[in-house]
Amino acid sequence: MFNNCDEIFNIARQSVIGKHLPNNLYVHISALIFLDNALQEYEKIARNIINNIDDFTIVKFNLEETKISYLFYPDFDNNPHPPLVKSVIINLTEKTNKIIDYSQSNNPPILHRKETFINENYPNYQKFKYLTSIEEKLGLLDNTRYIGTKKEWEQLLIDHSLTFIDHYLVCNLENNPQEFIKIDRHKAAIHRNRLSRPVNLALEAGLFSSETSFFDYGCGHGLDVKIMAENGYESSGWDLFYRPNNPLKKSDIVNLGYIINVIENVRERREALLKAWSLTQQVLIVAAQVLIDDRQRGFMVYGDGIVTERNTFQKYYDQEELKTYIENVLNQEAIPAGLGIYFVFRDQEKANNFRASRFHSKVRTPRILLPVKKFADYQQLLTPLMNFYTERGRLPQKGELSQEAEIKAEFRSFKQAFKVILQVTNEAEWDEIADRRRQDILLYLALSHFNTRPTIRQLSPILKADIKDLFGNYQAACFLADEMLITLRNLNIIKEICQDLKVGKVFEKSYLIHLSMLDSLPTLLRLYEGCASRTIGRMEGANLIRFYFNIPRISYLYVPDFDSKKEPILKTTMSIDLQDLRVQYRNFAHDQNAPIIKDKYLLKIPENN
Image (cartoon, rainbow, N blue to C red; front, side, top):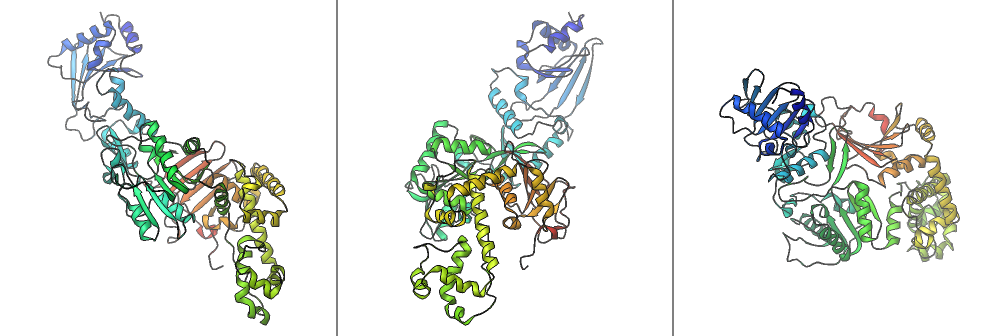
């Protein structure tokens, strides 16, 4: 029958059963009965040439020569990527065979995409298929040159900080996968010795006051609850597995950290989010693992914890998908605080205050230059007024300063009191502060354009007063903010601004500066960076920012030894494409040719200057 080889080869090429490679068809022994009859007869001829070959795993049909190989993978069902133990190659024309033994090899070939070798009715088909889908999302199968043998595959897993439990991947982004090998959904709870990133970000953002109560919904081992209580906050938590008998308690701030992505049931996932929101009196923190594009290895997970493990489910969002999901379920705006981390406010006025506060640049109160006796007599009384002006860029309105009565009793008005301050300070410095606060507000209004810009009625009284004093009216402020957004589209202007700066390093297509200098940059550059950080979030630990002026892109760089080494080495980068909000990540931790940061003294001004 096999005299017509071309016909056999064509039938094999058209087979819907088996895994196709350019010159070969691979079929699991269990799927042979589903092949075309001609192929089945062709294979039987080969099997009759050699005796005792019934324990093979896969048949390899050569589509250019009359050769069939029998491949032995004794651990096919149990090993996610089983090694080849033996290969028997049959030459049907010459009726000869060749045996290759890999049993003693320390680097044998291994299998991938096991579901492609079998029929859909095979017992483990869905398990194999699921594994492949996860590996594809993580980019593990992108470069076939580096996955074909045991050693290369194991090195790739090490580079990704990955390991296997059965057919499920376990990932620890801190290169300690064994610590995270748990079983079942509740075992995804992570042992830590510090606050989780979402709660820590809320603390850094100033969301907590001394009276703030905290509740951790899905608290796991309860470390966040413990640490917050030790810091003086009323703190409690509940967990379905670890604290099931704890009461659900309404609190000012509720944390739903890395919970929704481990709930496989769509309805239960939604209910968890709604339940956490129902307990929230001020701010809900929502965190989930997100997929970001790794330039070297395809997609990878960013967030606390694990990729997936035995009997657990992981739902991976991209950053914008997560934001949309939260907003659709809660019907409230989710404000990004970091990659995969959002704050949702009960009170929109407080939400607007929080957004505005994120653009509140740091400035110093002008120094006393000429000590005048009259000022010295009233310095203690006038210091709160100086601090208020430094904070807001304007004089207080009625009721905004607790020392109002005392100051007005002595000076009749804030304006008269401030004249005394101007006698001993540089008036130009106060003007600079007012302009800085003006630019801060423009940044806030410009970036609020991408969501829903609040109406004047939705602003807090103090922000309304800022706008009235610094711009005249809200419409004028919004107009200027929109004009700034239009200007931002012109990357040539960005380039010119970067080239004129005295701090930072200009490259052919970009400008690099230390993160600590961001507040001192021209407003248009702060807006450029804000389009990335306030939409997606900054990379954790980032200490350098790269502004591109050939394409709309912002990159965050993490250089761990920036302060201690003369020429520190770059460890990780995260780039945000502002056209499609695509996030790309790159890790140089295991790269012997990792970039070196040279001339680092150009990137920041020493703090004592």
